[in-house]
Amino acid sequence: MKTIIEPFRIKMTEPVKLISPEERVAALEKAHHNVFLIDAEECCIDLLTDSGTGAMSSQQWAAMMLGDESYAGSKSWKKFEATIKNITNIKHVFPTHQGRAAENILAATTLKKGDIVPNNSHFDTTRANIEYVGAQAVDLLCAEGLDPALDVPFKGNMDLDKLQRCIETHGADKIPFGMITVTNNTGGGQPVSMANIRGVKEILDRFGIPLVIDACRFAENAYFVRQGEAGYQDRTLLEIAQEMFSFADAATMSCKKDGLANIGGFLICNNDEWAEQFKNILILREGFPTYGGLAGRDLEIIAVGLMEALEYDYQVYRHATVSYLGDKLKELGIPHVKPVGGHAVFLDAKAILPHVPASEFPGIGLVNAIYLEGGIRCVELGSVMFGRSDANGNEVPAPLELVRLAFPRRVYTQSHFDYLVEVLAAVWKNRKNIKGQRITYQPPFLRHFTCHFEPL
Ligand SMILES: *Cc1c(COP(=O)(O)O)cnc(C)c1O
Image (cartoon, rainbow, N blue to C red; front, side):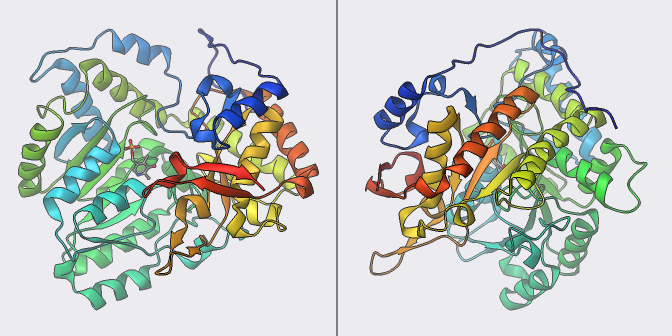
């Protein structure tokens, strides 16, 4: 087979600053060894997140000029609504400024203290919005999903037995809805099979519980289904997405992912009573129901982006870039989560730096080494982000120490990835000299964003 090429050419460039090793040392020092505090300009390749960092197509830039900024019932809203209805066949559509706003409205209107929400794995903002109203966010990931080295498909699936037991234990009246996140971001960008979504829906149906899909990467998931699940090889990604949404009673979406937009989101549902409540809170917090938190031009961009994300050639290329890095890591023997996900590759910092204990944050040691080696920014998903203090104030480490390399959509080319591989190879070679870190300052919540470190 020939090389899979980027299915686009570049019409506009944005300079990347090639920063010297001395400048990297100074930048990291100034940022108290926390890459969240480094200026974006000081990163030559920025793999911090795939959220809102994608490049728009010429069709999207052109659509932007068609933005109808009328307050109510704009032409852009009509396109936005029609596109989402085409993909999901769900009755009520509410635009929001991003995914967490949709989650916030859903949680605020349907949950109360003591309620339970099962999911394969809750994303952190989803969990936070559920916990904020006093409900409990429960993760019921399948056992395979918990083993980073196990190379099997659909590691994002929910454990159906656990779901059944969860409902029987707590009672259906404590569970206003169940969720499934496609792909499972928190669990390594791993996909969920159609059979699993169908299974979740069947169990929830038996108890009269609605299913809400966290749909942020629905198109990447549709591609995984087409490639990996029997019976889908001849289906278009649109048809697969339509089938996925046929099991949903509602969905939350961040258009910063598979909307191929820099901002935006939506909340959709079939239930008329939910829709009435969503509408009232939406007006209070986001805006009039036909624009939500978005400008008319954003609605245009998203209407185009959602369909582009379902283009087969785009997904072939997208998945090829992630697999390309995965294959190189395999060749080099660098431990990572297998199989590679849809939007990111996760390095296993615990296995790469066995000499650094969890109390010295191996993930941060690795993130900082990658920045110093090549000016590449990535993010720790380990004991800094997910660690907890016990009753005596002692740190309880996270189960996994991962470092995520997330891929912005349509932004970097193969030579950027080759450079990334060279940087990772050099870090791997020098791994014995990578030290742990000590926290010298931390805020009470979400410490990973702003805490300060000191290399040991
Ligand atoms: C990004 C994300 C969200 C939240 O969306 P924002 O647009 O960042 O608010 C929710 N769920 C998942 C799975 C996500 O990846």
